[in-house]
Structure formats: structure tokens, C-alpha cells
Image (tube, rainbow, N blue to C red):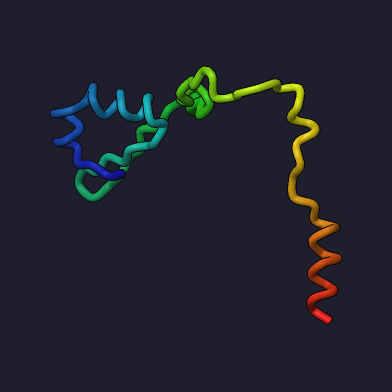
Length: 83
């Protein structure tokens, strides 16, 4: 995102807050030259996740036994049909 120095001056605290909160750098242009405001520490994307209690219904110990995509079985079936 690029803004002018005048816009930065008018909204300095909002712009810095957005850089910190969103982790997206802002380019400021003054007389045809640009500088960039970037956060020093990278944003933790997992911290922004919304906690949803109760989403896992049932026994979490069953997860290893849940059927998933079997690629070998699919390839055998595909090869039979391709012949």
C-alpha cells in the first residue's frame, strides 16, 4: 500500500496501528521518493484464529482411525479404466 506523506501526517497513529495489527508494510511517498514502514516482528497468524469450542465432536482419539484418501487404491482403479 502506498500513501503520501501528507496522508501519513494526518493519520500517523492509525497507519502505524494498521502496520502492527495487519503486518502489511506501508510505503510513504514524498517528492517522488519512497520509504517503507514495516513491522520489526512478523505477525503471528495463528494468534488471529478465532477459538471455536465444541467444534470437535466425539473422541479425538479416533482421528488416527478415520479413513482418508487412499492414493494406491485410486491409482489401481484409474489404471484399470485407462487401459
